[in-house]
Length: 537
Image (cartoon, rainbow, N blue to C red):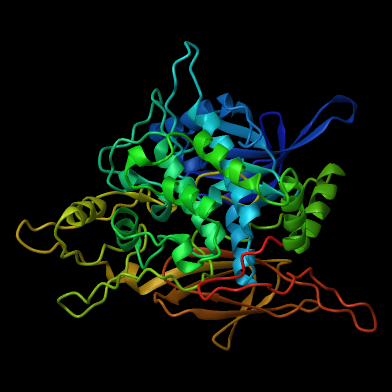
C-alpha cells in the first residue's frame, strides 16, 4: 500500500498541515483528541513516501526513534510514540513553541545586537545538560550506549518562548548498538560544527560533541562564525589546522574565566578537552554564579525570545488557537531560517582561504552535494584531510522552527550526494563541476503572510511563495518584498547554494492611530573593534 502524499491521519493523530519537508522525512503538525475534551498538539514525522520501502532509510529512522525515546530529559525534545499507519512508520514528538537557535542568532546579528555573555553561556550550559543525558544513556544491562550526537549545531537546538533550551535531531547520532552503520570515509554533520577528529573520519566519543559546544559558545559570545569559510574544504582545514584566536585577543574585556572554558572545549587534543558535557556545564555554571542574574537566566531568556520574535509569536498563537478550536486546515507559519541561509556576521579575524583558479582559469567554489572541491595542492596533514574529504558524502541538514526532523540532503539526489576528488600520487588533486550544477541555484522564498510582491534586481517576479532560479555566484542579491498593510522588507541572499528563505513581514503603522512598534535593543554601552557590545541586555 502506497502512503498518501498528504495524509489526513497518521495512526490515532489528525494531521493539521505540513510543517517542513527534508531529504529523508516530512514533518506535520498534528493533534491527538481524547475523551472529556483531552487534546494535545504534536509534531508527526514520517519517512518520505518514496523512501518508505528503502531498508536503509527505515533502519535509520528506527535508530533515531530507539535513541531519542530512551532519553527523558527537559533539555532534549521528547518522543511520545513510534507508530505505524498501514505500511509506514511515524514518530509523534513534543511540539515546541519556540524558535531555533539559528533563528535566535540571526535576529541578533541582523539587528547588530549582542546576545550577551550571560545568556549565551546559559544557553550552552543547558545544551550541555541535554547532551550529557544522551551520552549517559545505558541499555537494559547497564552498559553505556556511547551515543555521540555528531550534529550539534544552531538548527538542532530549540529555544522556547519561555526560555527553555532543547537539543533535537538524533537522526545521525552514533550508538554502539545502532543497526545502521556509517561507512568508513563518510562525513555526517555540518562541517563548521564538527570536531577535528570528525573531520578526519576518526573514531568518535562524547568529546566530539563537547568541541561543537565550544564552537557554539564562541560564536554566541563573540557574535561571529568561527570556522565558516568559502566552502566545506576550507572549513575542514579551519577546524583541523588554523589557529583559533582567543576571545580576549579580539576583545580584551572578555572575561578570562569564560575564555578558559571556551578554549578548553575547543582543544584539538582530546586529552586537553573537557571529558564530558557535564564537566563543561559545571564550569559554565561556576562562571554564571559570578554574574548578576544568577538564578533568573531562564526567565531573562524567555523575555528575550518574546521580544525578538513578537511578530512570529503572534502568528503562532493565532494558529494554535485555531487548532485547539478544531480547525482542520490552516496556514502554518514557515520556519524563519534554514541552514542554507547565510547568517550575517561581523568580519572574522581569521583570513578566509581563497583557492586560486584552476589550470583552465575557472575559479571553483564548493557547495554541498552540488559541486566538486576546488583544486588541492597541499602537503602535510591537511593534504590527507582534503583528499579524504573529497571522497566523503557531506550530509547537510536543518530543522524547521517548529519541528525536529533531519534533512540529510538526499532530496538533491536519490541518496546522499558525493563529493569526488581525483587524486594523483605525484601532483595536485582536481575535479571539475558539472556545467548544470555550477550554473544555477534554486532559492525558495516564502513569507508570513503569503502573497507578498517579490522584486529582485528591480524585476517583478510575482508573489510569494516563489521558487527562483538564479545564476550561481558569491555576490549578494537584494530581494525586496512588498504587501499592502505591511512594511517593505529587503533581504540579501548569496546565491551560492540551493536554499529556502522564510520571512515574517511587519505590520505597517496605522494612519491616524498608534503606530506598530517592535521592541528594540537598548543603545550600546560599550563596543569593541571586532564585534558588538558585550553587555548583558
